[in-house]
Image (cartoon, rainbow, N blue to C red; front, side, top):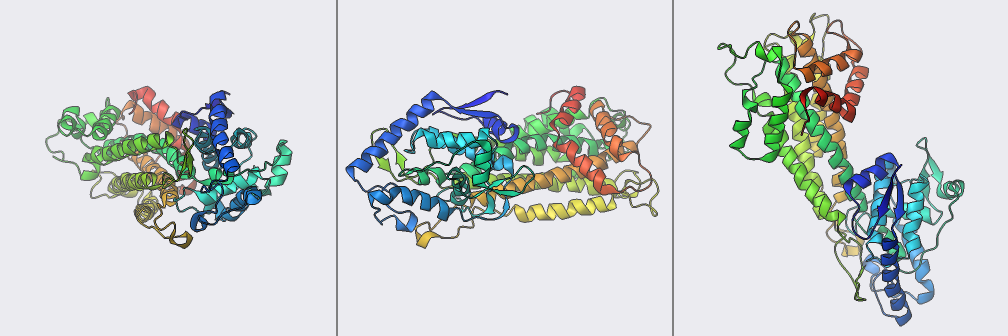
Length: 512
């Protein structure tokens, strides 16, 4: 297993994913240790001089004007962690917590937080020993960053709080540290605040979501192509010259994918020169690249936002190299919240147009001679009728989730924090929308394959033939009704599986 080295420069999105999802080992580079030691020396000098500085010698939030005696400043940092670990609800997934911890290490390693290197090293030890703090889903407003979720992580460093057990249960942190051979740490001035002030939770979720969205948008082109082929649609709207005259890059990429997926299809050839065939396909078929392409362009914007945040110092206050310690608002999650909300809207629409194609495939009046609900024996059998109900319900949920969280500020902290970003909520619901999109594409995958099976003996495009064979392995051929829930779960697994996409690409070429 290779190692991710955290430096004072940048941790890449790929490195965040490797640590979060593949448990890659983490090490602090010597340059990061030196940067943290230099910023800590400035904080130590402030302590010696007795200067009043927020987070070092004062209280927090609405208590920022309350001075703290030198002998109680370490106590202040521990009290801060305990009081701010006030989340509630189900635990966040392991991958989210690991991403958040790595990003907090990255933030400290930039050398503007004034912490001792051993504080960041303690977080690294949690990652490398697979000790995952139990972080409840509710608690962050995304202003002052993700205070409560990060406090639940920091509390484990103190030997307090909870960790997520291997079987999903909740265990005392003290026991988990002892089992891993790790000892609790004690915090010095400024260090508690530095552990919890920042956008690491919402950024971690956004980075995970961006990776998932990138894959799912390619799979949306796959399922669209299957549906178009099954409904005897036209390949004409996907010609590259038609997208060159409306130069949205995502639209061109999506159209190119669908055009590539439909090549060498006997089904498509069967009506290519038929003058009695429909002059124009319905929007859900013909406009697939316009919708999925707009989502791709939205994804590109969100990638830009995330890349900028990975370069950002989001602590407060920050320690500057000239010795100043300055208050900032860099912890405010508005950029991430806006990006997540925008991408959730786009992903919801990709799912909505997918469901419209499913409905068309199932409707005997619009499916171009396919049997009702894609069953060869309608009446006794209902085919995929209720699978479309499920898809419709998920589309409705995604519409509700597409309502932006980032416009819903709730003032807190005695009106000191009087405008918050709700970035944590925005990124959480984005992940839910994408999970729902996986389910919607799974329904379309099954429906598209069923439609192509019912066009036999005509043969589909090579990539479609692979999809048909792999779905048939668990769904069989059209016939008597099946217990559909496990079939849909298997289809979901295929949609999410990067290896399935690679197998399709082996037949049609790389998908953008």
